[in-house]
Amino acid sequence: MAQQTFEEIADTFEFLDDWEDRYRHVIDMGKAMAPLEESLRAPATKVEGCASQVWLVPEIDGTGRDAVLRFRGDSDAMIVRGLIAILIALYSGLTVRQVLEVDASGELERLGLHDHLSSQRSNGLRAMVRRVRDLAEAAEAA
Image (cartoon, rainbow, N blue to C red):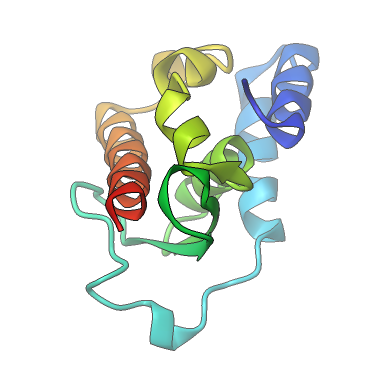
């Protein structure tokens, strides 16, 4: 079910044996993301439940379950920017129906993130996944 971009991330993680290298890769993915415009760093786009400041902005093409979702995001922490990049790779370009079918926990488990993130970062990652699902549910109802 995962997007090709996410599959490439999973392949890279499999290739990188050392967690220091994986962390560097996550940070590099975050650095490669374009920053959000200041106007989009608003309370409406802020993800609650993250220790760092996190913003997720959906772009919805269409209506209902077949609407296609794309996401942009940003954070004030480089590792979190990388985690946002991973979530964008997992979800962006899927329909609302597909987003709601993604087993995010299972897909992220493939990367081994939960074993190597602090509890605060893990909680923040769960909050970001919950926000993506909430946005998909709202788009489905619209």
